[in-house]
Amino acid sequence: MTLGYAALDLARFQFAFTISAHIIFPAFTIGLASWLAVLNGLWLTTRDDGYIRLFDQWKTIFAVVFGMGVVSGIVMSYQFGTNWSVFSDKTGPVIGPLMGYEVLSAFFLEAGFLGIMLFGRERVGHRLHFVATLVVAAGTLFSAFWILSVNSWMQTPAGYG
Image (cartoon, rainbow, N blue to C red; front, side):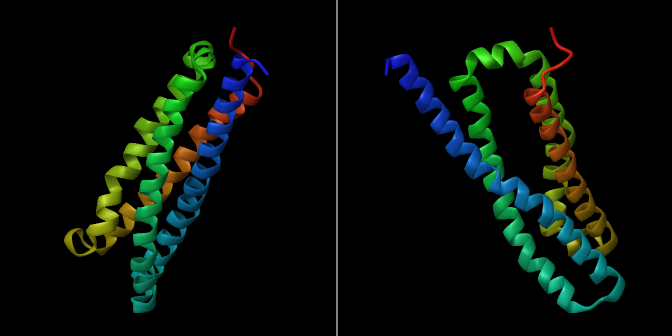
């Protein structure tokens, strides 16, 4: 095996490890954000303290998993530039805007309302807190849409010359 193939294999192994670890976090946060919105809505309509205790327990787990997803996602985006620089150069005009839309529309939406969801129930009122939880849940779905759009184009790269 020549040095070029060894470097390629190492880059593939590194990226496979990173993406295998990363996918756990977004998958968990997408489902958990929706579950938190359901729990918050049930508490808002019934005022059953069991729902809000469950919400409080799971929101802490959500915050940790969300943070881990952000960190591993940043590492993964750097690997596109370091390990796959030619790929990034060729596909940048298509993938770049889609990733930018994900950051601007979805991630900032999630991050902006995450603080209200985590710390704002007694500060902003219960209904606005529920709206913030819904926005975080919608933001996770928007993130999934943009990332799946990138992945879809990478699997079937049509329409770009």
